[in-house]
Length: 213
Length: 239
Image (cartoon, rainbow over all chains, first blue to last red; front, side, top):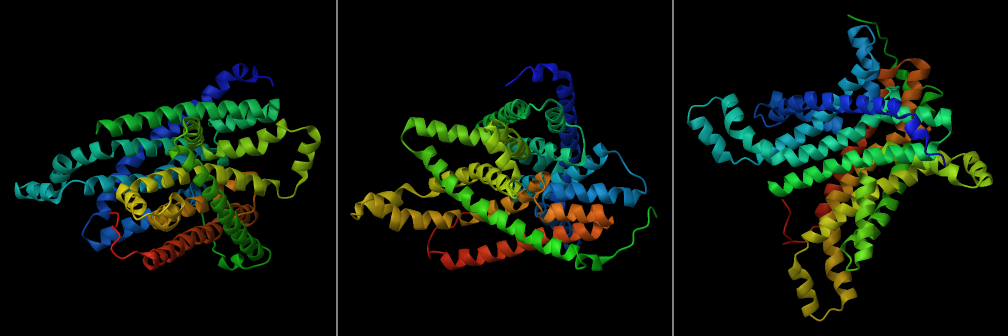
């Protein structure tokens, strides 16, 4: 055992953790709005809106994240005609993939708001978007916050998948160090502890929000 | 617009790719089923630890679940595959690394352990949905504890848990894709390999996606049928 391998490489590893957080944060910021749009699509009475939205959600939820990452890594350069960086193509794949999961949480949250409230909104002369914005979304969001936090933890754990196409996030840097230092036990235990600390605080937060609801 | 792409769908049944894909399908199914069975067994043990009256066991059960579900699966897989063998005596490590299917079985172990935490949580919440009255009614008709479990609680609990165990199977089926990082030749690994060899990524990934979607649909349809068959008339349905 030689644990000094960790302090010696701390700046390198911290840099990786920043990449992981950046990927998770940007995915969250983009997948939430997209998920909201898709959730509204799934709740729409119009068939031509409802069916594509449902197909999108169910199709993505049936596929593993790794495969979705490969799909976009391969497709994006073909569609736009030039390769994008690793970070951007992983980000696109993550946003599309997690939007499907977020949309299910948001849909359940919207459905938890009583029909009477929506009708009351319409009957006071509000438009569809005004009803959503002022009547439905505020209580719905409060309802779904604990679930959204839990899903964000899953999303953060998912950033390790970016390793596969060579993005130098935290796990990738750990793995690079194991090759040069041959200290795989110490390094993977350290990686596990770092993820455990971050994700455990996240789930503690989610539980507290759940209790306060 | 953009780069040209020539489709060549026949590649999916050409030699050697067709054979690879059939093999990949079998590997994925085999791995998912075995890991799911192991996860059920470990999950049941951990769930009973978590509801048992002995405090020590409850602490073990809770820490098992909390630790393992807060560590990303890839980290766990790498830990079992790269870190644990370095702790073994040298001769064992050499023996282990030379096993042709060491990667396959490591993936099975990692998947089973990871999924068992989710199974344990589902079982625990399943047990909580069984009304207290069922236990009391069983005991008051003169059944012993084992009889109560055998004839009242377990038949009830199994039905309550069918939907969540189905979704755990689907999760583990998708998670088998992670095994590609340690070169287990399952569906996603094979699709990527065909893309590397031929640059026909769309065909290969379409095949892989269809495998996952078709399996999801058939498992859901089959389990809905099982659920209807086993439905107890008058049993309160969960919303």
